[in-house]
Length: 397
Ligand SMILES: NC(=O)c1ccc[n+]([C@@H]2O[C@H](COP(=O)([O-])OP(=O)(O)OC[C@H]3O[C@@H](n4cnc5c(N)ncnc54)[C@H](OP(=O)(O)O)[C@@H]3O)[C@@H](O)[C@H]2O)c1
Image (cartoon, rainbow, N blue to C red; front, side, top):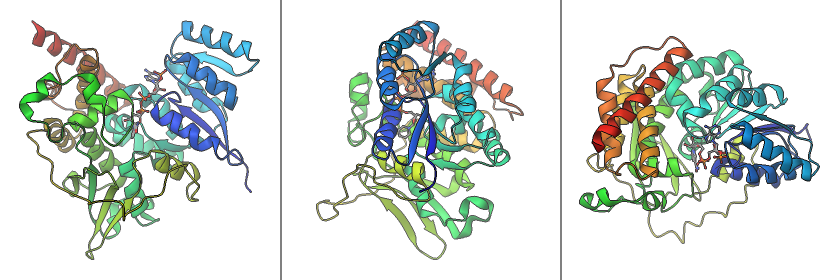
C-alpha cells in the first residue's frame, strides 16, 4: 500500500464536504484529512475536527475562530485555527495536502482553488463557479502547476469516465468525440405551469426531486442556471465548442451524462443520484473504491426518458448559453448576477421569476471584455454584483 493521500477540504461543512468526509471515513487506510474549512457553521466544523484531527481549520471571521478554538480546546484537539479569505489559501499551501476538494459554494471558492492549481495539487473540482469565472486562467494554472484536475460535478465526472484515458493530455484533438450530452433532471418545476412559478418559495425551490444539495445549487437546479454553468464548465474542461455540448432533460437522474463518438457509439455513465460516487472516483482515481452507495437496479427502473429542455420555462439556461458563446467576461457577469439574484430570492427579497430578469438585465447592460488577469476578473465580478443589487432595488421601487 502506498502512503496515504493528504486531503484538504474547502467547504467541509457543506453538502459536498460532508459527503467527502463520509467516503474518507470508510477508507482510513487511504486518506488523511489535513485541512478543513467552513464559513460560519462552527459547531459542525468542530465536530469534524474532533473526528478527523486536521492540522489546520479555517473559518470566515475572528468571532467564529474564537468559538472554534474554545470548542477544540475543550476536546483537547490541537488543530491550528485560522480565519479570513487569505487563510483559505494558507490552508491549501501550508497544510502539506496533495489533494484539494474544492467545495466552497460560489465565487468565494475561486482564489483558494486557483492557488491549489498553481501549486500542482490534485484538484477535485466541485466549485464550478471557479471555472466559469476564470476558465482560461484556471486551465493555464493547472497546466503550469502540473497537477491533475478531476471534475466532481456528477455530469462532468460521468463524461470524464466516458472519455478515453488519454483525452485530457490532448483535448484539442477531440479523439473522435462528436458531442457531449449533459443530462439534467429538470428540477422541481419541470412540469409546474409557468403561471404558478411567480409564487414559488425558497423551500419549494430547494426541494430537488432527486438530489440533496446546498441551497444555492438547489435554486440553480430549479432555474437550470446550474446546467448553464455546467455547459461553460464542460467547455473549459473538455475543450469542445459550446455548440457541441447539448443538454437533455432526463427526469430519472440515472444516466449522469454521455459522450457521442464519430463511429456512432454513445457511452453513458449510470448510477444512483448520490454525490459520493463521483467523490470516491476523484479521491481514489485511477483506482475505484467503495462509496457507500447502493448499486443501481435497472430491472426496478420503470423507464429512462430524455427530452430537449423548454427554453421558455428555463430562460437561465438560454442566458448561460448566450454568455458561454460570448466568452470573455460574459460568464463572470452571468455568475455574479446570478449569485446576487439567488441570494435575494433565498432571503425572500426577490421573486423566483425575477432571477432570470436580473441576470438578463445585468448581462445585457455590461459589454463583455477579454480579461487579461485575475484582477480584471475580480473587478468585473464586483461591478456586476453592484449592478445586480441596483437592478433588484429598482425592481422593488
Ligand atoms: N451539492 C451537490 O450535490 C453538488 C453537486 C455538484 C456540484 N456542486 C458544487 O459544489 C459546490 C458546493 O456545493 P454544496 O451544495 O456543497 O454547497 P453548500 O452545502 O452550501 O456548502 C458550501 C460550503 O462552502 C462554505 N462557504 C460558503 N460561503 C463561503 C465563503 N464566503 N467563504 C468560505 N467558505 C464558504 C460553507 O460553509 P458554512 O457551512 O459554514 O456556511 C460550506 O462549507 C458548489 O459550487 C456547487 O455548485 C454541488
